[in-house]
Image 1 (spheres, one colour):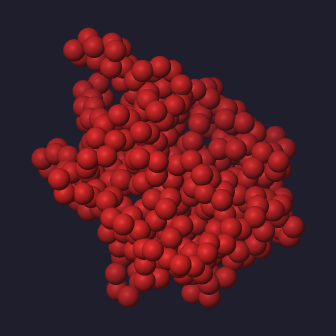
Image 2: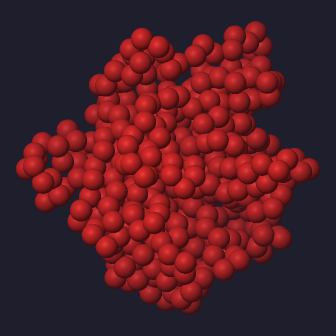
Length: 402
């Protein structure tokens, strides 16, 4: 059997672990205590999300046409969607055995349906814990996302623990024929070193290039929001990557090999998901911090001068955030109070310390990990998790709020 895995570069250099420390210098604090106007806008936004309900995308009992209730999803989490030529495509991970977020029992899931026939969903299991992948046992499955490579190709990317090492895997989907391709391994590049995109591969490549990193643990994540920059006449895709306390910017030309760009160079207490968005020569960056800090931080990396700006703090409750550009403005969606709240901050792209709260919404359900994309030319949609039970999609008109 031909293996899809490769050996890590054998570095003789020792890795340097960077300690987590509180941020000592910041330009501004945005509190979760907001104006009445922001709350009123938030009420309207929450109602719009309720009214704009499109569908839930997990496998529920009513959606199982063959009546196999034992195949329904008892837990579902972390969504990504895209609307392409009248079809909604959605990814997430699910537990079909019991109602908990347990990677030992999870499946990477892909679903799609026509916009004008929402109930006609197709569900495809991409990989499950217990599967055999290129002769190796898959012990755990975690974060599952979706990226569009071109007009006819989607990539489903997910995390799998295989024989004690976490990997980022991907699988292509051909839109025109609705066919899934074979499973392959993403690659992680630092300088001249290219390894498998795994915990061990990341550590080896960073150490060989003399780059320190924070403690990595549990799974590896790639953020699902892509932003584009032209470099040497080529289209380059940017996003964020993370494992435990380690968070960084990565870029790719093909969505297969991802190159390390940078990580915040000031003391901070970052953990898990790091939202990124590139506009021109600036990469905007927001990440939550450990429980000891009630703030996430927003900063900017200058891709030309290779410098990080002094961060500003934004009160946040330990959740995943997302950026979206609408009508020329950059907006940050995050969870300012708890996972039943959505906050929207308009980012001042010239001076982030002048960024301001647009609204704060107490949602009508739990609203974990919002992900925002265009649904049509002038309409946005947001996918999110409801209590780790539902993968929900709602559309809304942003001009009333943004």
